[in-house]
Length: 161
Image (cartoon, rainbow, N blue to C red):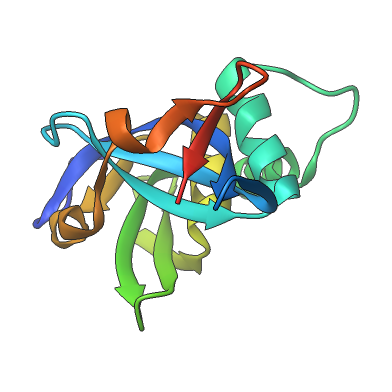
């Protein structure tokens, strides 16, 4: 899949615990960098289960039985289709990001766009080996990774808000 108009290829930098005023909160920052963003990343705040799922996919960790995102990829493939991409699309009311999973039938059929949370779209795309794209308009919400991703007292990297 090629980038849709107004989008750029994106890479998942990782998922990191979040600190606010020196306190860790029960959330993680999913950091996504546009191909030409020069070290700026879009932080999308997600829950612990979603962060664990993405981290497992990034590290290539498999489980004995399929987890939810693995199951979704398996179901899509069982229906003679495949995940061909994921897009991070918009920020609604300055608090909720939207995303889309893009599927294609194996017979060369039309593309199907499925509304998704960014964390699910990223987790599924990573498992399927599909590209991730981010809307260029979201670049204005990006942050400098060198200023926001820091080492905590224990040496772990944390995202500081």
